[in-house]
Length: 331
Image 1 (tube, rainbow, N blue to C red):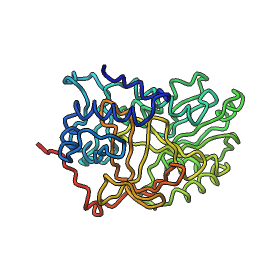
Image 2 (tube, rainbow, N blue to C red):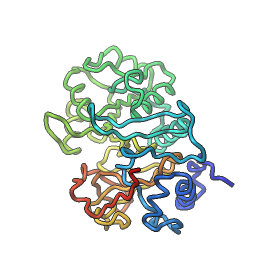
Image 3 (cartoon, one colour):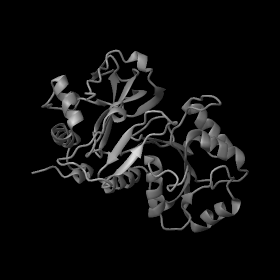
């Protein structure tokens, strides 16, 4: 009997059992991942540690699709990573957008009561950026919320005190999403008082032409500029190539939803994990990526603590990936 991808949300089934079933299906029905596993000589892992992680670079070089038959044109959602003109961008073909939508909602429910929140997004709107997985996610959250106050904010315009007042009257809390330095610009350009229980959700984008900051410095600055306690500045960790997100809820450590796991890998040999507290490459198992690839080696540097929480320490220098052989056919 074929594995139902929506079973990934069933917490009564052990994670490893689900992961091994997803591996079997993807290694047999995803040509790129199947070749990668065969090149490594791994076709029948008996535990999670033996499952190979596909280097994220593959999403720039190949179409990473798990399917038993060829997809029809316009039958899927295409997400593209950000990048300037002429830059090679990652492509993520999402066969089942409803699976992505459930991973968004169920994932956030593990950390937040969505009934309580109005969603404001300080990003380009959906119509201007339909190939952004982040914008798609925010659009889904905005459409789900029924107060009428959730929306994409106009860029380069200050927040309005009367709109803040309407949220206070509604009895709901505000969750404000935005990229790191967009949020800094918004805070500096808006002389208003946010509701005291506002959550600011920073979604990444730490690099800027102006300067670079550590995440801790960024969060301290956002807390100061928005007039909020530091523990109300949260972070989301996701990427174009994934369909799930991890969250840091007022701390510097990220937690994953129940169908997602992170490990820290040895950059010289990504089949091996490093010791807790050591820096390495972030590896992700995202079972919601059922129709793509659930087992991904990112280009991010991180560490993990004894509670299986992780920190993101920036990008790993590709020159240091001497032991990371991509083994991806380039036909």
